Image 1 (tube, helix red, strand yellow):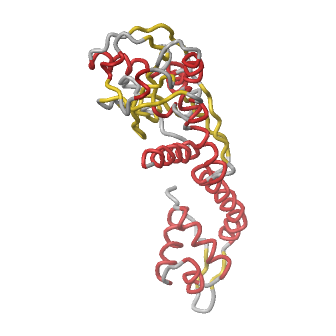
Image 2 (tube, rainbow, N blue to C red):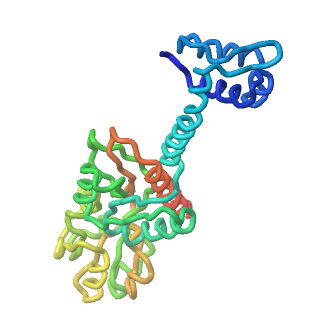
Length: 299
């Protein structure tokens, strides 16, 4: 039987009101349209549901049987549809996000705080991972999406840029380069460098900048986090190139941060699996991270 939900709902109202005109006003149809719906339902079911006279509308035995069960069935259907709709509109649950260390320290805390304020029912759970592991978590489905640094192209990932920022020089205040307003990349040749290691998404970009600018790099130490680099610089172990996002007053202490010219940027991207849609909650979190990153870019 090709019975439509509209036919059943119209019949339910007719059965309750015993009047085609009043039923029409409740469901937003004309009296002839209501009559046509009931007639089509009877044809599909092969049984007469209503006895119609000029004075009244009466339910047949089949009509009474259908009306008695229909209310419960339609109520259950409404509940199912409401549950499915809630999946698309709910603002309660957990979203897992993988982020590389510099972003975990300097971008994501603001995103988490904004989420708690704007969407208190959403728990934005941060997994602080090196870039390789963050991307692996996205591809495996362990996390909903990732926030990473300019990943190499992959047909398995959908990437969306949200923020570009320059690399800069950080040096002890006593270093000769610290007296300049800006420093050319070429000036780093021969200087002892303390750099992020290759677990960082930035190191590949720094090496590419060295090659492009003709820098003969003398790398003395490679470590995993900018904070470690800064404390090594405090000890007089060299100078460094780090992304601007890592340069905060609390992290720098007595060190000096200077722009490098020509400007070389890294791109921060949101990444998710290409052929897998985000859940509605994850979509909310994705847009929120994008908004916070955009506000930072505007500043």
